[in-house]
Image (cartoon, rainbow, N blue to C red; front, side, top):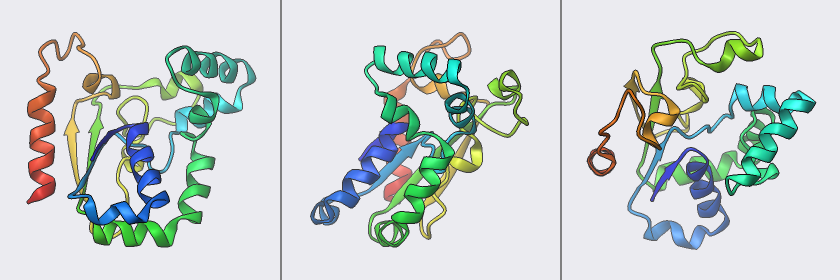
Length: 173
C-alpha cells in the first residue's frame, strides 16, 4: 500500500478498522504523511477567517472540512493516543517505510506567526515519521510537499514512477 500525505493516514486507519486484511499486506509506504499533525493546519483551524477559507478550499478540491481538521495536531495526538496499542502491533506485523521531505528554505510558518521548523512547507519533519518500533524512515532534502504531487519549476521532470519504485524496493529489503 502506498499513501501520500492524508492518504497515508487513511491507509493506516483502514488497516486498523479491518485487521483481517493486515496479513494480506506486503508493506506500507507513506510519503509526507502528517502522523502527528501539521502545525500549519492547526494554526489555520484556530483562526476563524482562515479556517473557513481553507475548509472551503478543501471542499472544492474534493476534500472535506472533517478531513482538514483531522490533519491538525490536536486531532492527530488524540487519535494516536486512542490507537496506540493497535499501531504498535501494526508496525510489528507490516513492514513500513516513511518517506519525509524537507525544504532548505523558509516555509509558510512565518506567514502565520509560527516559529520556523524543519518541514516540507506544510508538514514538520518530526511529524512525518511514525515513531512506533520497526518503521523505516528516509528524508528527501530540498523537497517541498508540492514537489511530489505536481510538476514545479524546481522539478519540471519528476519521474514519480521511479520515485515510487525506489520507495517500494526500500520497504521490501
